[in-house]
Image 1 (cartoon, rainbow, N blue to C red):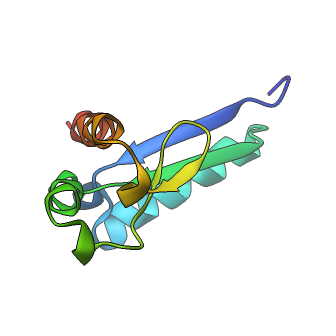
Image 2 (image 1 turned 30 degrees about the vertical axis):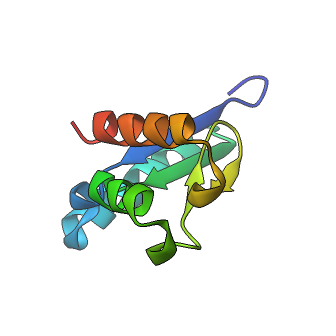
Length: 94
């Protein structure tokens, strides 16, 4: 892969459940790197957890999320950014 592309993946946790789900993810990552991939960023988000964290932040003080090229504590994000992360997570698994 020329010029160092990175590969961003987002999954709903339900898609990775059990040996079949984790095996499929493992095969995907191995294939990517065997074909010259250089970097992969994986985000596994449950939208219901993010919504609960937005509504009850004290229950999730250490929840880290990928924003856009960096990770941040969910509670440190603005309300608008929290809503955007939730919106993105609901699109990832559908």
